[in-house]
Length: 210
Ligand code: HEM
Image (cartoon, rainbow, N blue to C red; front, side):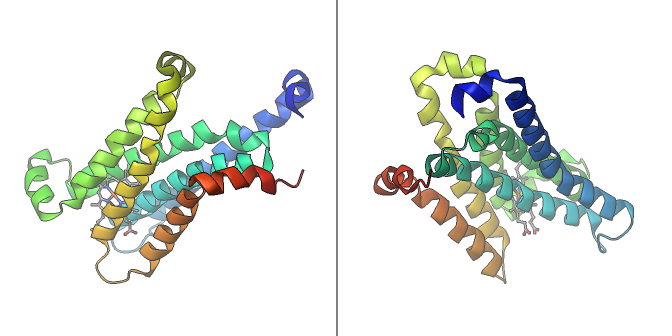
């Protein structure tokens, strides 16, 4: 593949379709939840429905983004690397929409309530730190910032591991009764993080089938 695909117009079209497909797939859940709310099919608390679903969606985007590097190592397929930035930005978009639904449906845009809310639900601070982290990564994921940061880009973007930890902590704090769903996400996160352990990271390219 490599340079041939990069130059040929056919290859370009193929990657354009792949990226556009990923874009539509990432957009689809948001459209689906909006459609459910618009059709009164989102239960008695549509605001909370949006808040919770978008929160889980953001976690999914983060997990998927962090799958892409190990998948690239395992398969050498260029397509995974090509959507890494897009999915990372989707994680930021979902997290921002999650905050917006919180501000709109829980706070009713009454920011004076934020102080007492934070005391009552300290997990909000954890979520905010995670969102600020995602925003920082989003802001430094363009070519210009990558060039300027040079060697520092990679260690900086390893903050995504800490952000994943913060999001899981935020989620853990929210869950009171049923821990099963949380445990499923924590196990997935642990698996994805295990691929970063040096012996595992070294083994992945050797498992390549082609
Ligand atoms: C600005 C920062 C944030 C605020 C104010 C915030 C607020 C909230 C609130 C109020 C809840 C619902 C608690 C309840 O059930 O009563 C929640 C749940 C959740 N949030 Fe956040 N959050 C923030 C950031 C994030 C980020 C960055 C992510 C992930 C990318 C995230 C993922 C989640 C998840 C997965 C849940 C649990 C959903 C569920 O129980 O089904 N949050 N958040």
